[in-house]
Image 1: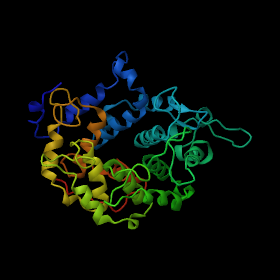
Image 2: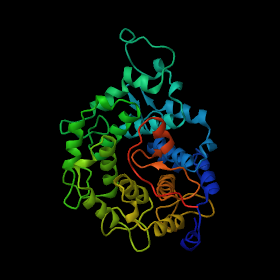
Image 3: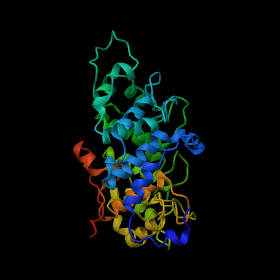
Length: 357
């Protein structure tokens, strides 16, 4: 592992090293850590693939192998995707699967009779259908909608844990699939607004403290649903700007340490609100770059710590919103490349900083 002093010497984004690092993940399936992280596998593939897309290296991972793995995670009984083959379906893993398949332009690879548990008497299927067609006619879309609770918030799965993150995941999933018209928008937005606090921020549930990650999901949800006018954007933007510490890094709430992942959580919300200039971009860029591992690649939560694919994505995504050269602009509402959301007709009125030279 690199030392803090060696990490902090980085002055530019080490794209070739980060590509190599992402390619190396999961190579040794005999490692204990590989099996201990199986509950995050599908999410991790989304993190790695999206980071590669932003670095313009999507071809660095085998497309067919990735698609095959995603489809192996289908939970036919539940009508969604699990985090790994044999795992129960969860709304988070289902979104990751949808995002991966859209990024790989692979929705037409889905064999509906194999992946959808339905009654032949009710549906007549061709051998293959696109993902939106599958979800329109089959089980997964119904499962997503069935997770909405009477209060308006969504649960993550059949066990009933609720969180504004799951509401955002449901909204993004339906949006990507062109199915937002099936959503009870008023009920969904009403719960999110109840999670707003006096400081302008949002919590995970009603009464929970404000947290930058929850601010991201709530602001992005409102942006996707064209409901940003429901909140006090100035007060929220000030709360977000105050997350920047003297070393340039951002924290998730007052009195906490800086963390690279908040480079996206905070910046995404500020980008949607049109307030990115309220952050010292130069200092934040240097903080993100200082958290790179200059020997093996990857980005850590802060300088000197062990890198991981989660922080690698959100570090690169933060740099993208700050206009770092050589990166594709990421859409802050979807955490997908802007080219993808433009192609799907989903881009909202957000602003990234101009590209640097």
